[in-house]
Image 1: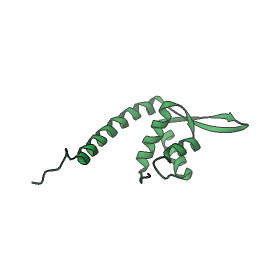
Image 2: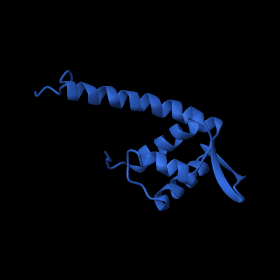
Image 3: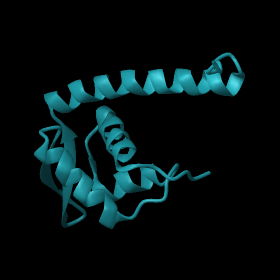
Length: 108
């Protein structure tokens, strides 16, 4: 199932993907496509933005005779990911409360 996602959520997904290991653009996009429709033309500007923010770094590495550009989290990127995960948990808790009926906005 694919849901529309914001660029902020895509940024969060990218950082989460890179938390485990360095990766390259196509592989990152294929992982994101498990939950959201995304084009590579959308992905690369977001990767660049995360790099400019200091959250990612990149390097080239040979793979089957071709150079492939890999992305890696920086220390700032890891710290930002911790913050985003805390925000996400609060969001999920609120959604779960609404869906399960335990959280409601009382009318005045």
